Length: 215
Length: 192
Length: 221
Image 1 (cartoon, rainbow over the protein chains, first blue to last red):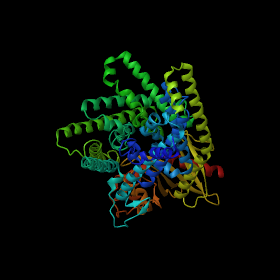
Image 2 (spheres, chains in turn brown, yellow, cyan; image 1 turned 60 degrees about the vertical axis):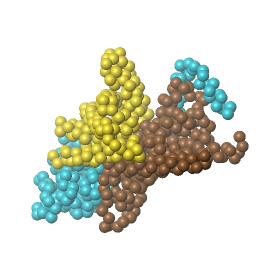
Image 3 (tube, each protein chain N blue to C red; image 1 turned 30 degrees about the horizontal axis):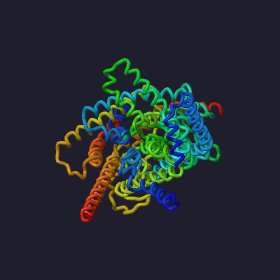
Image 4 (cartoon, each protein chain N blue to C red; image 1 turned 90 degrees about the horizontal axis):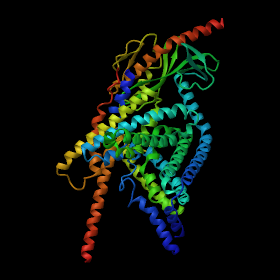
C-alpha cells in the first residue's frame, strides 16, 4: 500500500461521515438528541461535542481491544465502555459548564443509547486499526455535530430570532415560538430530510442522464 | 393523591415521552406501519418501563447512595438483564403473553425511552409509588403516540403521496402535527 | 492486513466461559478506574457550583445578606443543620454584615403550565412580608410562561408583598391592596401557579419560622 493511497483512504473514512453517510440526514440515527436539545445553537453544539468525545474515545478503545474481546460478550463490553465515557463527560460538563449541563440535563446521559455510537463500534471500530477507527469516529461525529448545529441554528433563528444568544432582528421581530418547542423539532428535521431527498433524487437523475449520454 | 394524578397526566399527555421529549423515536418511526404492531409494541413498552421503575428504585435506594458515579452503567446493565430475565420467565409461565410481547422486548431494552424513564424519575426524586405511576404514565404516553402515528400512517398508505416526501420526512411532519396537538394539554393541572 | 487475519482466527475459536468472565471483569475494572478518577477529580467543582448557585439565590431574594445558615425541620421545629441535609426540607436564614437576621429564604415547587416550577423566595417574619422571589427551574412556554422569570414588572410584585394572610392574584393593573399579586397577560396559569406556590409554602413554614424566632428572642433575654 503506497503512502498516497493510504492518505486517500484515510481521508475517505473521515469524509464519508460528513456528507455521504451523514448519521442524521442520511442514516437517520440518533434522532433523540438531534431533536431534543436543538432548541438553540449552543445546546446543539454542546451535544455534538459531547457525542464526539464519547464516540472518539470509545472507538479508539474498542479498536485497541478488538482482538481481546470475545464475540459473545462484545455488545456488553461496548456498552460498558460507552457508558464509562458518557459518565466522564457528564461529570466534566457538570463541573466546568454548569449552565449547559443544566440545559441538557438527562440528555447527556442518554448519549449512551444513541444508536450511532454502538453502531460504529459494531460495524467499524471492532474491525479496523485504531487510526482508521479514530478517523471514522471523528468524521461521523463531525457529521452528527454539523447536522445538530444546522437544526439548532434554524430553530433558534426562527424561534427566538437570535443566533448563539445574539439577537438578530431587533425588537420588532415576533419570534415563531413553536420552532423552539417540540413540534418545531419534528418539522425542522422533517423538512431538512425532504430537502436531502430532493437533492439525492436530483443527483441520481443527473447521473442517469450523464450515463445515458455517454452510452 | 392529587400529586400522583398530576404525575400520571404529566407523563401521559403534557410531557409525553415521544412527542415532547423525543424519547423512543427509533421504534416510533420504525415500527408504526401497522396499528396492530404499534399497539403491541406500546404494551411491551409499558411492561418494560414498569420493570425499569422497580429496578431503578432498588438501585437508587440500595446501591447508588454509596456509589453515585455508577448510575449510568448500573442502570443500563441492570435494566437489560432484568428485562431478559423477565422475558425468560414469561416464556415459561405464559407463552401467549410471550407471543404478544416477546419479539419486542429485546428491541426496546436499549431504547432511550427506557433509560430516560430511569434517569428522569431519579432526577425528579420520585419514590417507589411515584416512580411506578410515572412509569405507567410514560408507557401509556408512548403507546398513545405509537398508536396515533400508526393510525395516520395506515391512512396515508391509501392516499396519493408525492414520492419525494414518503418515508421518514413525512412521518416526522405528521409527528410534528400530533405533537402540536398535544401542546394543547399543557396547563391541564396548572391552576388548581 | 496481518491484524485482520488474527482477528478472524479469534472469532473462529470458541472461547471458554472463563475468558468471557475475565474479559467482562477486566472491562468493568478498567471502566471503574476511569469513572472513579473522573468522579473524584470533578466532585469538588460540582459541589462548588451547587454551593455558588444556592448562595446566589439566597443573596438575591434576601437583599443585604452577607452570610446564611441552613435550617432543617425536625418534629415541627427548625434546628440548625451543619452536615448535608439529604432529602429533608430545608430553609435558609440570612444575616447582614452586622450579623442581624435579614429574613428567611424558602425553596418550593409546584406544578405549572408545562412542568414543575421550582423557586425560592425571601420572607421577612418581622414585617410579615415577601421581600424577593426567584425562579430556580421551570420549563414554561418561551415567550409566554417564561415571563414569570423574565418579566421585570412581575418581579416587582415580590419586593414588599404583604404576606400575613394568603396572597391573592389579580389582573394586571388592578392591584389595590398590599397582599395582591398582578398576574401576567398571556401567562395567567404560570403566574397563578407562582402565587399558589407561595401560599402553600407560607402555610407550611410560617408556624415553624415564628416558633424559631420566638425561641431565639426568649433565649436572648
